[in-house]
Length: 137
Image (spheres, rainbow, N blue to C red):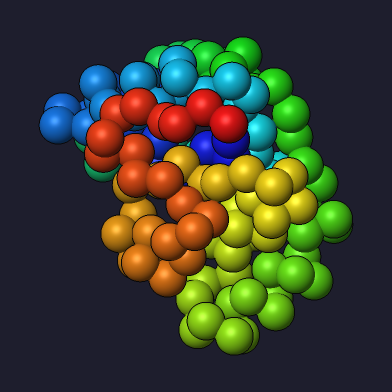
């Protein structure tokens, strides 16, 4: 399964109302795959937490290390970016999200996400992480 950035963030930052669902989604995935762009997105989320929520730099670095330990496969954006652009233009959806969709297409799997817009735009290629459990393929 391709795991969306916020699934990692909610699980590892302990976001109330989402943490348990995110943890269950991560635990239920047979294979945790990401486009390499997730690292840039996640470091930005953690930076925002350091800046606005008082998360210490040391804890922020631990979050990044914990995320890395959960990842089984990283897909280079170079393998995805042309398809991601096509999807972004076709569906008028941000390209940073369509990188995840392109990765799902490539791997013949789905993206686990909390993103309602992404779920609505790409229903056959996404799984709602709000359910907490991911159907194993």
